[in-house]
Image (cartoon, rainbow, N blue to C red; front, side):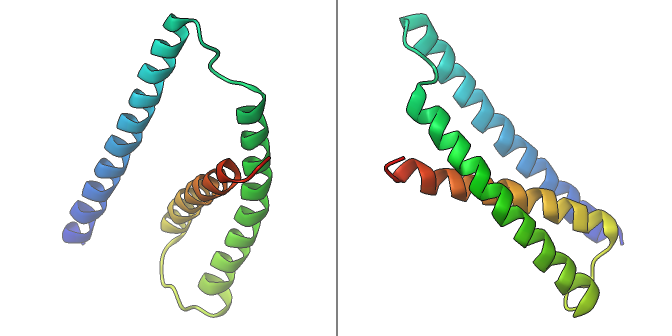
Length: 108
């Protein structure tokens, strides 16, 4: 039990550090651009966020349905409720990231 807890805590710590670094870099970049007098968000970036958010919402609903089906109906994945919520939240974040990358490369 303790070995799994240490492994999970290490993974969570790494994830939190990565998220902090990404947001720190983004904040520093926005502050530099604002200092130069550039606009932080234009019409295209707003549209990309809107399209990515809509697609991510649809994909996240399907992701949740499939996750619950695998856990409850097929019983393929044997994890507890706390882990299900963690996997769901992490999965939705990844889905949004993929949708944002897709929408950013499209001609929106």
